[in-house]
Image (tube, rainbow, N blue to C red):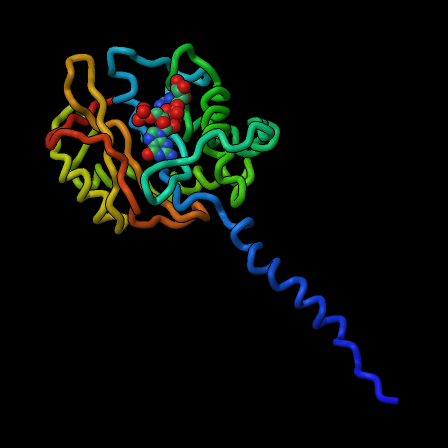
Length: 232
Ligand code: 5GP
Ligand code: 5GP
């Protein structure tokens, strides 16, 4: 009597697993398109009508500080507060805290050690990139980007100094684009007298938070064509 061999177990497994494999990449893939890496000029944060407070560790360096690393979608919208079960936990970034104090200083009032700022940034933005960066990776990635791009040095090399002078927005954008190969976005705010000044620099970064990219979409806020670069 002839008896047909049953299909090998491996073939059966493949038939069961194939449809799962087709679905898995979407559920595992990152759920955002790129990051904005946002730096703030402390002189412009402080010299507004609202003023500022130095962190409890003292006056920060006269340098651009990190504001945040923000997951974003290519259409300009962005996710926020993605995981209420993942609170900021300083013990996870203990080895980074001293760099965070220096490079990611808080200027909000009342004075604090930065915990509130970092908590806000992690909970609002960091939890939305948890598919690629856990809390330690997230803060480490932002610190790495800060080290990778020295915006103040780039501007100074182009003769653009935080001296309270006025500079064309174009010259600021060109200095940074020429140095890093990608166009930054510049956000302004107003000093007490209502003059427009250089407040934040947005750089775009790929989903691994390691490589600068051309911005897929730009924020809406605009500066005037001549802006002040206040001292700090
Ligand atoms: P503002 O309204 O002051 O420009 O922004 C307030 C906050 O909203 C920012 O600090 C940031 O947390 C978030 N935000 C504003 N614009 C963007 C954006 O284009 N992308 C992302 N990811 N967050 C943004
Ligand atoms: P975002 O604008 O990123 O959504 O929110 C920033 C939050 O962090 C605000 O609640 C703001 O008061 C607080 N914060 C604390 N320190 C700083 C700082 O140095 N710069 C900015 N932009 N916000 C800060």
